[in-house]
Length: 294
Image (tube, rainbow, N blue to C red; front, side, top):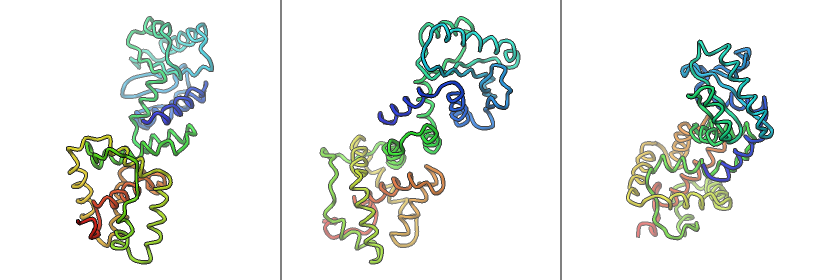
């Protein structure tokens, strides 16, 4: 997860208090543990439980304080554990304490004194849980927390590229993206006349928004020993599609969109197309100009 996205998620989670925080944890844990395996608090009728992870036999206690008050913090821990012991302990062996802050040392000690094997989940753990979600789930969490979509851009690109090329990159020392001199001729070779204006418009959008720069920077971060993996994967996927270039490119877009996201996901489709257009420009797919062949 890139730093701006991480920091934005962190700030938003820290600003969730009481039931807002509890509702967020319900959404996150439904993703993490599965809708059929996580019982939200509204289905439990409370009794001190803020959720149940069924297969882990675990009762959840959520605490979203607006500020860290040691006396209140310790009272909350004791009250929640007391409810767990009275109503749930006989059936559920495990207890989990979840909070919107980095758990203070004195709170950690208190929890361990009550039940040594208690799972303690603080802010850093929650952010790691988000990192481990699928792309679609991660962005759903981002939408829930009102995180700007643009902050997910680098993560989208990184995931697509890593899956396509694994440990591969170009070895350019200069990662400043520049338009390729053969691109206009290459478009003319691969597209029908009526599509050419639209292709250039799409290309300019990626260029002007710095998306190609992001792609090249990410590619630069990989070892060059597996460059052939990139070529083989893209070429094979492209050649396994039928029709003219435009049709094949659309089929590849839909193939990767189906894998990484949900149907009609404009955000993810945008970045998938950017990666494919970039690779098209870099001569991996499509008919080549005479200049490229030299």
